[in-house]
Length: 64
Ligand code: FES
Image 1 (cartoon, helix red, strand yellow):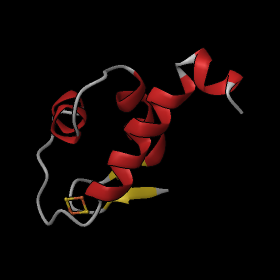
Image 2: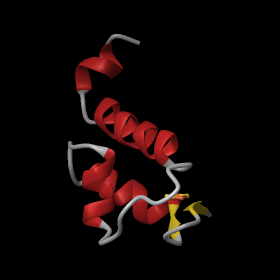
Image 3: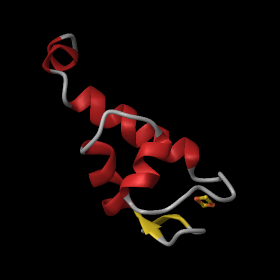
Image 4: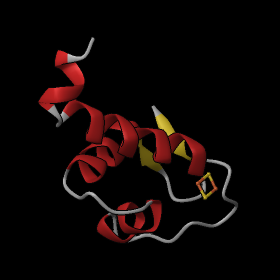
């Protein structure tokens, strides 16, 4: 499924980029070799980064 229409970036590609770095939305775009344009997808990509961080922290799972 396309998340970023402007750059034709799909969820799988963006999720992989979000998992591979602990940076910002701009870092995810950089990793995909693209730049944000309209910005409509930015909240969803920010959520992907947050999910990747939460998933990587065992203490977050233990607290649930
Ligand atoms: S939809 Fe991603 S920058 Fe426009």
